[in-house]
Image: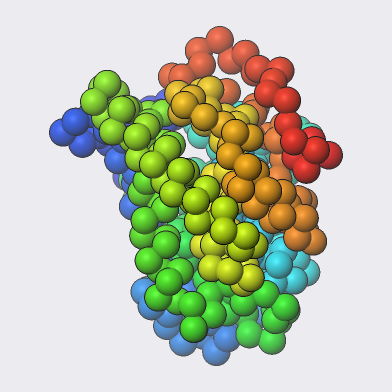
Length: 320
């Protein structure tokens, strides 16, 4: 991790614990917003105008938070507006690393070897973990934002006429419902699998485990009424947030994170829902099962041998 701008210790997945030994996620450090006219967003400072070619997105294909932003970039037609770099899937002792392995990139914007160098370019005295995604401003040479929920909303509405309008991921008439769903799904499921996988006590693990499957059971019931998406026939950011966890569940969270009561494959409605989203043009391009498996199973504290399992057998939608 970084301490006052210096890398001081090998990468570890758990940087903080609660009184029960539960995993505590780090708070994002950079919270500025890109807006069509450069005015200030909900947090941070003004001056980040939506411009063609000005911004760069750093992501990891194993990371669900980063994958949210890749889906947003794809669905809003921003591939030619915002460039992207993909880090290598395996986590090194210095965290995310750039390279020329299959499906990964060298950093052609800043010439960094590790993602933590991007953080210290933006703030030479920063402390904490260097996480993805990162939205970088090439013009000002700094990080705009490293909170995936913020970046997804920026991609949805912050780039004005530079973006396509075929998808509106946070429509005004659904915002209250989206916010309510996000507030329940995130702690119980999206972060719940991490709380289970990185728990350091039995009580913390079991609490997270039960949260995960209570939420999956609830979502199976919700989608079992024949609706296409969480809020009916509209695909929104709530679906993006749920999908990125579902698509990693059977190949990583079920085994490595000990969330092994049931697989997504055992839930008919959730399986059909996952396949529907994979069928949306462009979404499948943001998913790399190879990177997901190699990345999660490279976490030394959970898998010291580094052996990547051959299974599980995947659905046709994921296997292609």
